[in-house]
Length: 182
Image (cartoon, rainbow, N blue to C red; front, side, top):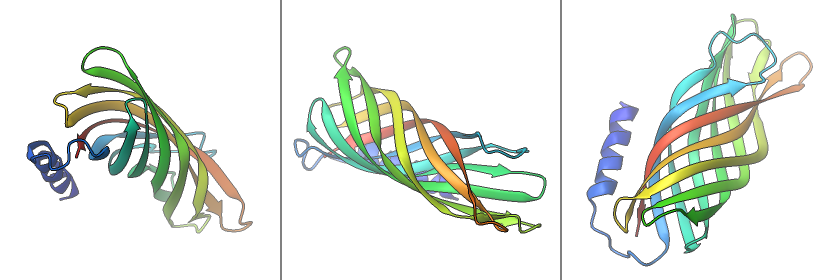
């Protein structure tokens, strides 16, 4: 159901009439694949299809700020399953390559929240704040509509129930998305 809702939202973004094309504000959506790394325990699953939404402001052709909420992946061991979601605030630097192509880099902070289901009560969900970063390429299909392909790295964590110690891990998200400038 969520994938259909996201597809409908992305389609509505692409066909909407620009009301304020010069304001600098933009919105967008992403769909991608997440993979978990350096978890610390033997994972039986460490990837998932994820989706997200973003809002940003482009101050000039080379600099903007962007807030994003996205899934950071599902993971499991023999006795536990979990997922992480993250909210980020990033500075975005853009370098034009050609008329309609540009590279972008993101650097910021993210707050993740892990949710856990554990039959042995070994792990619990926990929040983590960590640096985030990413790279990508964007194609300007029109002055208002951009198509993105990118990679982002997020920090997440779980907590050991017995000791309360956090186990930090990373999520790598490869995604495709659209952005629509107002």
